[in-house]
Image 1 (cartoon, helix red, strand yellow):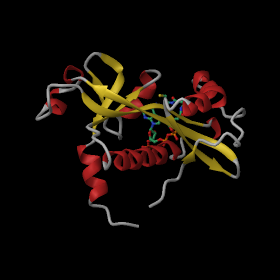
Image 2 (cartoon, rainbow, N blue to C red):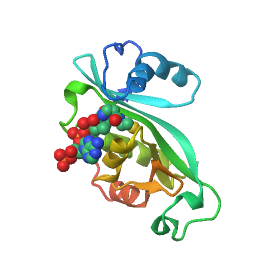
Image 3 (tube, rainbow, N blue to C red):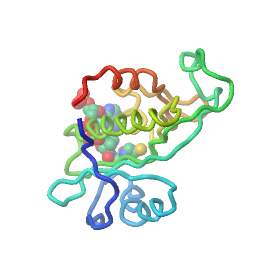
Length: 171
Ligand SMILES: CC(C)(COP(=O)(O)OP(=O)(O)OC[C@H]1O[C@@H](n2cnc3c(N)ncnc32)[C@H](O)[C@@H]1OP(=O)(O)O)[C@@H](O)C(=O)NCCC(=O)NCCS
């Protein structure tokens, strides 16, 4: 299956994007994502329909310390800081929220994590939620677990998702 998002494209109009709840996520895509691309600080992927930006997410690398993990996540893991992919931003335009697009972008993101994991170690996926409501979104069906020292930083082991992609039929 192909990705449903495209690489950051500055020719797509980003000024009208509005996720309503967090203006910082609107400002980021309109003004800062391009700079971060140039500096290799992060990569942003856009979901576009008919030239209209409807959602985006941003990835960077991170590391997770053992003491941030739940007892379950700690099992059999090394004591030193472990490599992770950080989902630093995720936003859907207000007109599209609640229609499953967030879920589809998360699947797209997990597919990218799987791609990265074939070239380099990725033990965890980390998200920094903007508020408790967003944290609940990641905790719900997505199965993220709050870090032990920051309830708005959530962590997911990649073991299950990598295994799921590995056993998926190609196509
Ligand atoms: C949070 C956000 C990314 C979710 O995307 P979305 O397209 O609206 O969500 P979906 O339609 O894919 O929802 C998937 C499921 O998660 C649930 N969900 C959505 N928001 C939720 C929340 N805040 N808490 C708990 N569950 C939530 C939905 O009810 C849905 O469950 P269902 O399939 O049983 O109905 C989007 O609403 C958004 O951009 N919000 C503003 C910006 C933001 O908060 N970004 C995250 C900050 S880090």
